[in-house]
Image 1: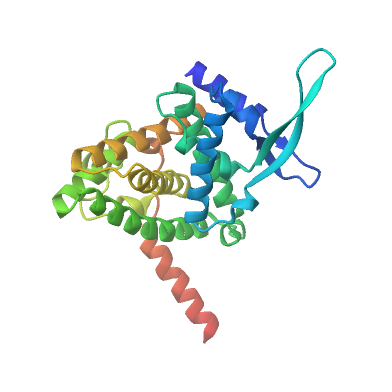
Image 2: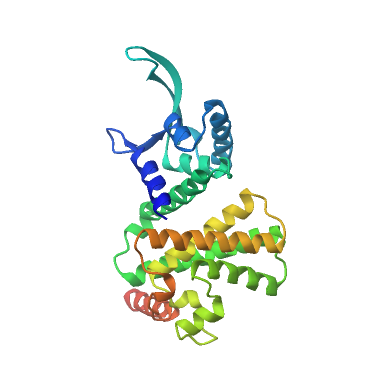
Length: 280
């Protein structure tokens, strides 16, 4: 774990901030951090990232900007080379397309995936305006429903067809995130009834962890074109385990130890009743 933290601090130390407060990384420094000795090979990875960026509906030039840079080639000599300015999202796409056999690439994937998701959530106008824990729970629970649907579609494309197979698939994600506990064990640990939905009794912190698990698994299934139930289950478990490891590294509370919250359906009912009284 100490080795991973050192690598993650390297990625953080490479971050630069411009005069407007925008953070960015440079391609040549990132290439070296990811153990690419030949910059031409790294540029091929960037091209894949550009394609992924475009396919995801983003404007590539907002995230990857080419510029000329000067590097030292001797004690007093410099020469001009091409370089690129990369946003955090661009770095995320690059490490997702980099050589997976490199240990540092796997660490970079976790670092940029977590940080990108945190940044996305923090920048959601609808989320930043929320003041109370209940409002955050309602927002994240809604996001969870949306992304669970997208995850189900991605899992079906991977070969997880029958309801019983999807339940097994979901359990693998839970086991990765909850230290080996499946849905039944989580119910028992949190003293929930069989009829109670785990997600409806999670606080915002636990919901955010599960939302990250779901979104990253969906992306992994599609990006790597995973096929077969066993491979899909393994992918879901691995993502859940990575999210758990990140929580541990950040000093957070493990999800199975987080408290059970009031049924979110009751909170929704209270909110609707309050809105009804305001409108009357």
